[in-house]
Image 1 (spheres, rainbow, N blue to C red):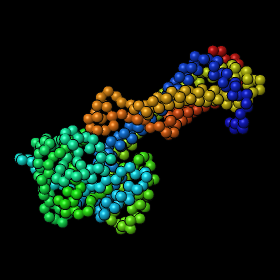
Image 2 (image 1 turned 180 degrees about the vertical axis):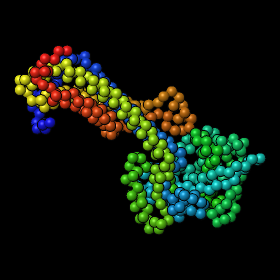
Image 3 (image 1 turned 90 degrees about the vertical axis):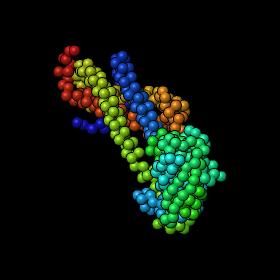
Length: 421
């Protein structure tokens, strides 16, 4: 096959005119392409937006976008693996403009008891003012209130654990554990708040108390187990991590005593779940495009068969076969581009609408309000979400247009002119 060394300028108006020789068929094909592009743009933008919502809701519960821990604490969260000078580290990280909030936490496991029942639970020492900036638990208080900076022997407790211990607001709870130095850690706490996070595991096994009181009870003076931080744009976290490390290194602290982990390392199951959903969705999107492609292929092929005598006459008059083939392929390309343009227009308008007002289905907002999480999905508005679907449709339709175009090379002028349909 001869290479297309150039495209005669007359082929473009000819191809455009030939598209509308059968306006009904062209409009149906155009509608199929536009609908496929429209659907892919909206579905992909909404899907990526749902990932952002899932990540945001999951990380705001406890994990955060990143954490600073002592080496080995991630694998063995023991009370002895503590950070030195956590307040100094937190203050330096907060100076980075891209960092939204940084909170200090200390964690231990203890036996908690009410009047007649006892259960094991995780005790989390928190800075209440900072927790309210990056955690969703302060927003999930179903009874009472959240911790305040001036609180000492106060606690907030999960709803399931409160039910198991038969506790309510104002009741006392006894805590018994082991301090960092091996001593007995014991205290009596007053329940000021009960939260409902939506996670059964957290609701039946987590108690939050003020960080200073935790440090006193568990003999952890001016120490903590990790810092949890949230950045203003999660997409920038990967490029921000070196800056976070550099900021901590300026403190001249021994870098062997701390390590920064991103959310992907802290919760690998979340990313794996998203990747699994992406694979399934990609298969469905390709199937959708293939269905549209075969319908377009049928349209283009019928158009070529109906014009066999015309092509035979053009060949007999001296027109090159590759020019005719290129003209046919240009017809499919122009029709596809027009359909994609319409799909981009209407798909973009729909995505833009939900980007500002959010997308929800019946009951979603009520569930979100109940657990203090986002009740709407906001589609991702960027070049990638708008380009994936149309480029996929363009690729397959261009391939589909090649087959009818290449049939021109098999035509013999005399035989083609004698074909009757």
